[in-house]
View (cartoon, rainbow, N blue to C red):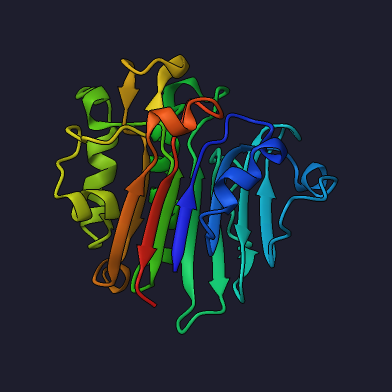
Length: 237
């Protein structure tokens, strides 16, 4: 199973072919327009199943499944967490819980980025216990920006997930330490020297023990399309 997350920097309908050629089973696209706009493009490969959420039809969070996979947004979805979508995924040997993430809530200035993930975890942890889980997307965060006086930060979120044995696929695969990543996923304002790792795929042990490959897109290939590069995570079936 191949999962790809890529913040497309809007206008996904004009860029979809660039990421779909990597043949994802599940594709998470922050800053994605409403799928109704995508369907107007005859070259857009129709997903088997899709979930989209956003308050702006031009800039929401899109989740697309291909092959036999089916997505269902759970009734427990709390719209106050912008944007964390709890999604049931069916169609493989074992159903699992997917949290698609674009952590960005300008209206909640105190908890605007990683604070959204932290609050969502406080609410959804009971839902995650003893489940196959993947959390993936644009967290808009890194340990280098931790503010110790806050009751939440990136490191605390990583520790919360670690307490459930849910770990970052990238950091496992490349044997990296949080905050010292060698592969950026964001080039701020598309400047190569302003590089940060802020996109993640965290997974429960039943996935991480089958981790096959992790690829992070490079600046030269993707900077013409977005300020982010894709994170591609592949698990053995």
